[in-house]
Amino acid sequence: MAHSPRATRFLPILAVAVSTLTSAAPAGAVSGGTAYDGSSARAATTRPVARVFSVSPRTVTLPALPAVRLRVDQPGSSRVSARLVFWPRGGGAVVARVDLGWIRAGRTLRVQWPSGMTVAPGRYLVRLHVKDRDDRTLARGASSSGRANLTVRAAPTAPSATATTPAQLVVPSAPSAPGTYAFPVAGPHTLGGDDGRFGAGRDGHVHQGQDVPAAEGVPVVAPVAGTVRSTDYQAGGAGYYVVLDGSDARSYFFAHCQKGSFAVLPETAVGVGQHLCNVGRTGSATGPHLHFEIWLGGWRVNSASHPIDPLPDLLAWGG
Image (cartoon, rainbow, N blue to C red; front, side, top):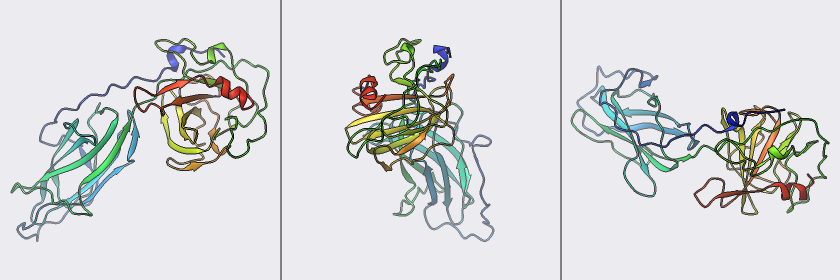
């Protein structure tokens, strides 16, 4: 089927530093939890303590940001002043700061990020900073440090939707023996037309992979043993996708997976031919197909990372 090249591009994400918000917490900045009863509290003799501080998940792909839950206890104080900061793990200045204002002590809260907030891709230390009314700062114990690591990944560039005009079907060869390769679509498929090839022109970029049309629900499998780096979703682009770091020092990208079909979890090892997801049409896809990429130097790790034409490999693996 024909498709609109413009509709297949990933939405651009601009990484910008977030300026400090007003010191008073905006309405709805945090919500939830059980109120702390301070009616019988004695005068504070200790520093504030972060009894709850969780950042989940620890790896996100833009434009997503993690969920942050926190609770600060301070005997004798019903409220404390709090803010979150993002420090680059490799050193440098704070890239984002969110002031939460005066929050209730003894109450578990969930942070709601300011509208439009984003940070540049990278590795960060997310720190909770607290002061009580006597300017005592947060006590950072081993089990209540108020710190957490976070990795922010760049949004992938949009793969192109492929034409799905009927063509001669190709049935892949039998599963490869351990240590070799398997064709990534475990069922009847085609290799599409010229518009679905690597390097085909797009609106503002070129196609960085190979489209493999197949029926929705056909299993997508690992072409090589490796470790799943991520499973994620991008509306208006890749849809549901899987990233695999192969044991051959190459990375593999599988886009437009069927909703609810992920068969693996991030950070898990997989073998040759192991089920990853199913062929789908999520994101910017006009028909069911797998968008498949091979990367050298890691999948979008840095400026040296780059994709290569996967067609020769696909043909060698039975395509």
